[in-house]
Image (tube, rainbow, N blue to C red; front, side, top):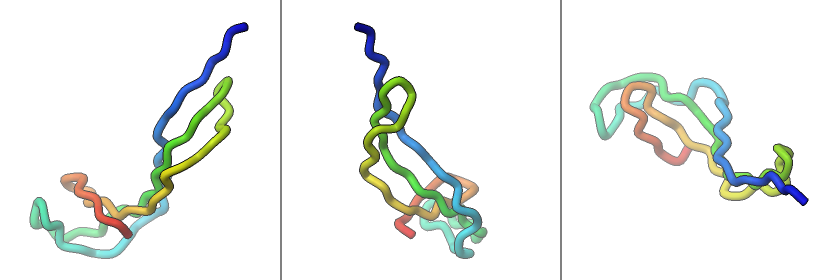
Length: 67
């Protein structure tokens, strides 16, 4: 029997976040809000999801902080 399974990261865009000054690059901009999680798939169907967290990400350098 052939089983096709895998573990992958999922990233969802939640829209614009707050206007912040980035501690890494020093630019002030509107950050993007995202939700990330890891998931186990079986035959390309998500079975289990874990490690869900919401973050705000600098749109210039990619620095992320808990939102």
